[in-house]
Image 1 (cartoon, rainbow, N blue to C red):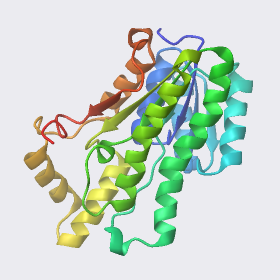
Image 2 (image 1 turned 90 degrees about the vertical axis):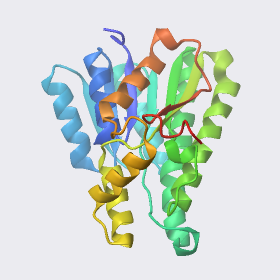
Image 3 (image 1 turned 135 degrees about the vertical axis):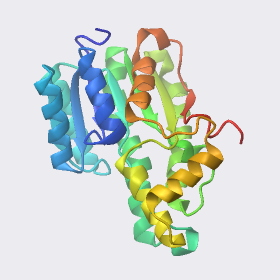
Length: 260
């Protein structure tokens, strides 16, 4: 077991990539905290981990809330004795171009995706710098690498995460803290399904129709990815095999962004 005696903290751990990563960490011996605005989802993840013999703390909350983030990180350290790995995965999107995006919608997306990543990374790094070890992985999405139509706020938030990642890697590498970001493309998650459904509604098509057309036209591997395939990359980045990898931006997208 690669992570026996270690602790992972995962936001958006109630479904999709977050759940897959939490389960994968637990299977490798780590204790896991999962944070999600969906309390039921967080508890379902914890139940899956505990039924397999692992340890998991389910936390219900919004990562854009500084107090919630600070307390949940402290609770994780108190319960499991430390904090070694973080996956900043919680996110939301609003399908709309600039002129159809309200102040409130912009703030919600930026606060959840970018501010939430900042708050969690700051709280975790404070502990990691003291202990001299830690790995933070941020989910920046393919939307952080390329512009996406009807996604002004989401794309902006994800691009910001890439540069936040680099700043963390530069400032704290000498203290034993590594920071990388992953950029998943079309992955079979609830967020991806919602996005395609909303895009489809604008053009008179179903979500699956929109996704199928996009995959055939843009993804060289001609398929959607699985959450477990993203989780495996996160675990690699947190492992000793990746001990000299920091500040990296890694696409997990079946070749989607290779031709930009």
